[in-house]
Length: 286
Image: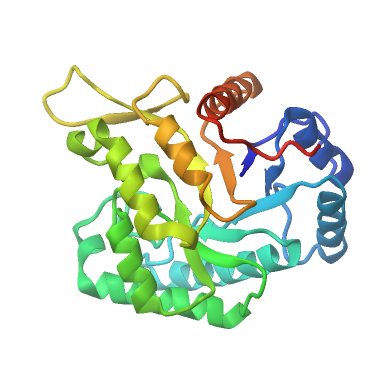
C-alpha cells in the first residue's frame, strides 16, 4: 500500500522536484495531482512524471469534481468536457485514476441530495456518461472512477457493482471512500463487518481509497454524522487496513479533508501506528 496526503509548500512556482521531495520527506509515496496542472501543460506533465518515477512517488488521482448530471444542459456539457480532459491528464501523468462523482439533480450545490438521484433514468444517464468519457480517451494506464456518496444511488458496494456491470467498460474502476458509505447508525456501529463485505465484493476493482473518520452526533433525535480526524471516530481502521493490504500492490490510500499540515501529520501517524500494530505495511521508499 502507499499512503498519501496533500503537502504544504511555501513556493507558489511549480517545481516537480520540490513537490515530490516534500512527499518523500513526509513518508508519502502517493500524491495528488499538482494543483493547477492541466492537459495543456505538456512539458510540465512529463517533468512531474519523470520526477515521480525518480523519487518513487505514485500519482494516485486526478480530481475532476463537478456535477456530470446537472439539469443545466450548458453546464453539463462543460462538466463532461472537463472530466474528459482530466481523464486525459491522468493518463499522461501516469496517475492511477481520474475521480469524480456520478453527479446530482440537486440545484443547491454540485454534490447534494435529490429524489431524482435514485431514479432508473438517472442511473442510465450515469452509465451513458461514464461510457462517453472513457470512450473519448481510451485510457490504457489509468481508469475513470467515481466516489461513493451518500446522496445518490452510488452509495454502496452493491450499487457500484451494478453500475460497473451496466457500464461494461474495463477502463472504469472503483474509488472507495468508506466514510461516505456510512449512512445509518446500523452501518456506523457495525462498520467492521461492512468493510469486510465491501472489500469482498469489490476486490481488485478498487484502484484508490480516501481515508478519514466519522462520528455520530449523540445529541440529536434525527441521525447526523460528522467527519473527524482519524482515530477520533468509529471507523474500524484495523479491519480497513487489514483488508486494504490484500488489494493489488501499489494501491494508494489518501488522507483528505483536514485543515493543517499538523492535522495531516497526526492522521498519518495514527494510520501508520495502526498498520504496525496489525502487521501490515506501507511503501517506505527503502
